[in-house]
Image 1 (cartoon, rainbow, N blue to C red):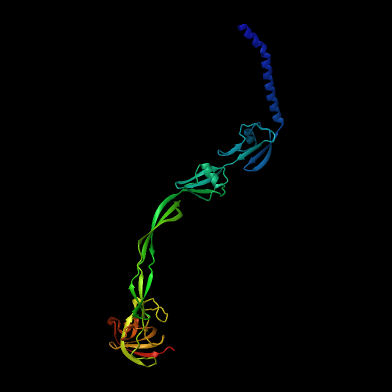
Image 2: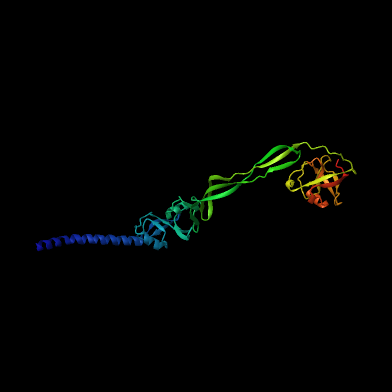
Length: 339
């Protein structure tokens, strides 16, 4: 039995030797072919095309031969161990660094993307719940900084005032041209609830989701006089004419409002209200108690009280010493009549 196996091995030995000789011959021929014959290879590096003649036998040797160095994040197709053939195209996709800034800090990411959206896809970051700047369709390039912040939702309450309305009521107990405040106005208060979205310390969205009135406004009620003014006991309209009678004064409640002739009443100006004298007439008013006089200009109608002949501004009343008394006997003399 042992003899038969040995005899069989001796018969197959020439056949094994023949195959071994064929392999060695083919390898030798291939090596010699590559030593004296080159193949044309197309290399595409980030879209830039170049053609080279190479005697290398596979991709890795070609790169070494041509001086191409791959970075740790670069991609190449086909693989490094792929044998070279005539007309073969090799694609090198270089990775480039982009800066990613988040709520916790910044880091460098090597990317092959062309847009911000593709960078997010590489990182596995979903769009929902994040704020990204610049927008997802923006192009990326080496050194590009991309901001990725988690959105924070909050509810905020803000108080605002409500303007009070103004109600005018006709009052036949008040003389024409006069207005009395029946009720002071007061602003109301309302609370507004907002849904606010923040990201990276920036407000992205503010949406009102509710409104509640905390305090209703109180209307300002003004009595507008409709009672005709009484006729003066004596008419004076010429220069040098004078008359004596009771005078009063008015100020803070009418300061800043319009007088009968359309001016803005200034309680600190020397003006007065008279029932008949033309607007712009200048009269000299003397307070008989102190003997002091003041020159005033007529720009309003009044007084409302029928027993008074003139209503002075606060400043005019202070100048002649009438203000502390409220009312007092005066003499008025027409100095210049406005025609």
